[in-house]
Length: 151
Image: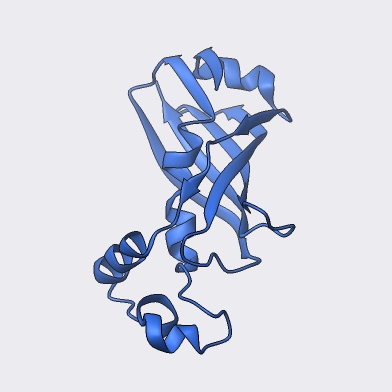
């Protein structure tokens, strides 16, 4: 866990690898819950029997489920000792889903702070996230996120 005194300390850490999260299992109940929340019940995600005969041999997590894990995974990577009043998901510059996450796989997030800049509203941090799948060479996804930290 990388610790920063406050959000302004991110300004000096631009370009640095912040670290990686712990491994998290992507279980079928998480996939089913996400399917219910998003109303995306495609068979490759929720139909175990059909998916067993499909291209992946089992069910797979939604790409957006894997993407939605980034805030929780990143919270294990870095910490602001003096928290800002809020951190706002400002958007995404780029997301690529490179490999499916099969049910029961474990994933973790590697985070690089690619930029941090002072704006009139706060500090805008751009981070590159690479979500690895345990035992796999290719990552599940690579995403560049923008977070606005408001003092």
